[in-house]
Figure 1 (cartoon, rainbow, N blue to C red):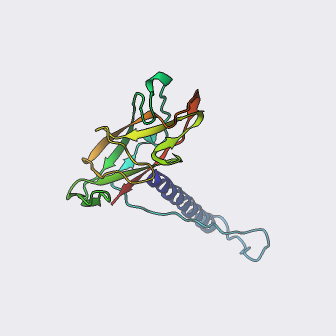
Figure 2 (cartoon, rainbow, N blue to C red):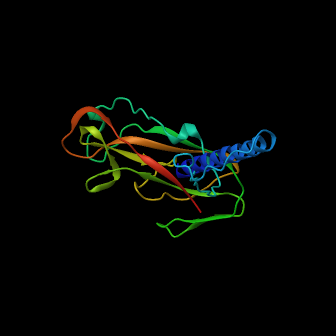
Figure 3 (cartoon, helix red, strand yellow):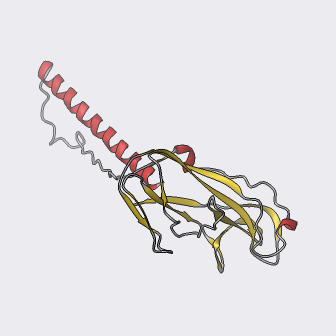
Length: 208
């Protein structure tokens, strides 16, 4: 996501620069062919300045627009499915599509195991899911609405993904790649208050 925003800033800056250069060229043409305008830089209110800024970043992959903002519908969960604290409901898959991945040298360390994902051709990526958590339960995202319930994220192997921390690094093939994750409702308290609920979970892609 971060990369997408920065890329947009570069595009805007370049677009403005092109407009400025084109206008200057046209003015010079008019000056040569038609007239020579009087220098008006000393006239109050007749001139100004344009400040253009941007940033250029290097990213091995591009996050598809359809993956940047998603709505995941979990459907209805019966309280009988969640008999005890920690019990999970049905997992619902969501996907992050990465495009235009290039071949690069990469080495990303898993801070929890100390192991490093290394490749001379494949980009490596870690993902960090960010959300407020249930008190004393840092792996469960807090929801608004129903009480006694939270959300838990997992990877394709069913391993719980810790919130607000980087995931294990994944090596990606060049070209296009899709990362699949799951979100499940989870019971977080003895007392439950049924009702509709929602949560906002953001994420960021971390490259080497």
